[in-house]
Length: 228
Image (tube, rainbow, N blue to C red; front, side):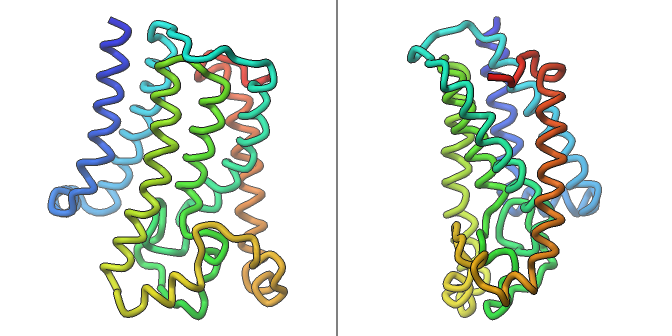
């Protein structure tokens, strides 16, 4: 029964994320519910299913894939502050062609803003979360869960870039040059820091708050202490 629950949670979570990517279906749902109500409902359902999926993975029979080493417990603790910062960076991100991107955000290759650091901060956050937690949870159910998240997140970057290229093929080559999959070079550019430093600091501060909240709620929500 535990494997059945895990399979059902995995299937439902996957369906809620892949079906809305079918544009005609998503457009019909937005037309019926309204944009704000659709995204609020979608976010709520996704969060509930994610929590259920993680809990179901914990209840699945333990099948070890490799023997965990003590140092592996440190990997999520070192990675999650970075993932939290990236997730905070990606909320209402001022670039439309990514997870969490504002659809109304202007696309100007000459002024890419925070997208000069990365076009896909939220996807990087999910990929890092998945890869780091896979190291500390070397059983079959959790490896399927966490490595699946990491692989889908990395693959989604190419999908979003393809959508950007299709949406505006004349602008995309220049936009691809001035934005990045991941780059730290803008942090050494005084002009970029003057323009974007304040927004970056606010989002990084939000990332710190998010990390502290996740760390201290982990035991209560997931049932496992994150302490190494």
